[in-house]
Length: 127
Image (cartoon, helix red, strand yellow):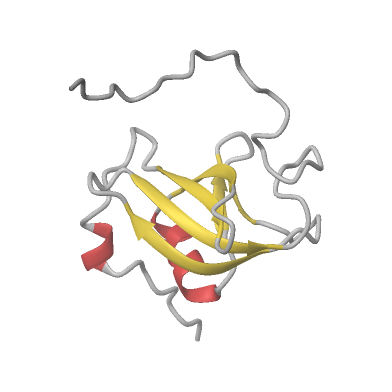
């Protein structure tokens, strides 16, 4: 007799605002430095696994399958916390990253492509 797979807590599921594919963006951040490592996608099952297993699981949009970060590369993401943004359409997953977070071998997925951007400054009150 097989045991049923548990589902994501309905109280959490009800808070999520998913895209047309049923996915929510998950921003992954190093827990102690605040460094943004990568962005992945989660459906209810990927989030359930992440919340209950202590390792980050994503839904691969290109391969259409679940993948747990580090299973093939050894670059594991150990979950330290998960937060849902105020709109319910994005997650912040804080982790302890082992090795590179990016599939290119870079520490983060945001190391290689810096775009030219005007840098703003807050207006100072005169007087």
